[in-house]
Every structure is written in structure tokens, then in C-alpha cells.
Image (cartoon, rainbow, N blue to C red; front, side, top):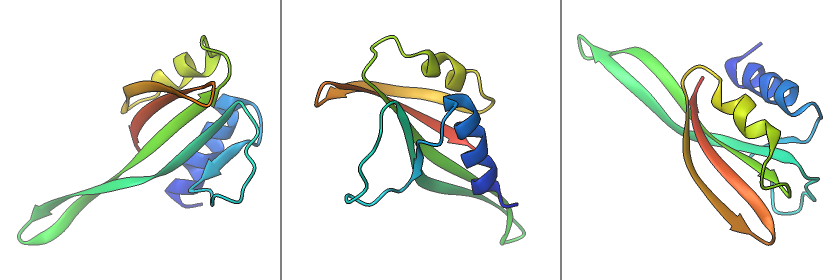
Length: 101
């Protein structure tokens, strides 16, 4: 199993439902609460002019109608996960995290 699939399964377990979307197209009708994530960057460290390590960073967004979403605390407890910002759009709360996985 690749790392992205492992991350997907982890996020599904945190949410407790199957409403976890990886780079969803605009045609997908999302069900809330949900988690949307996408690859943000790959940090590559060099040694002897060759890639030594590659760490993938994902942007993970919890979208929930509840302003006190229980999923925020669950996600923020993960290793190498950092809260970045919160915003509200269309009466939905969005919590944006960056996770290295």
C-alpha cells in the first residue's frame, strides 16, 4: 500500500465515514462533515547531488457545519501535523492543516 493510500485510510478513520476526498473535481457533491486533501509539496533533501530523502506534505482541510468540530482535535494530534488557518465560506467552517506523511 502506498503512503497516500495509508494517509487516506487514516483520515477516514479520524472522520469515521467515507467522506474523505483526494483532489475532488468540482463535479463531486461533497457530504459534510468531510475531509479534502491534496499534495502540496515534496521536500527533497540532497546528498552527494542525489535525492536523499523525500517528504510529501499534504494540505488537509476539515469542512464542517459545526464550529466546534470534534475532528479538529483528532487531526491536530497526529505526528508532523500543523494547523495553518481557519476560514468560513458558504456557512461552512474550514480548518486547514499541513501534514507530512
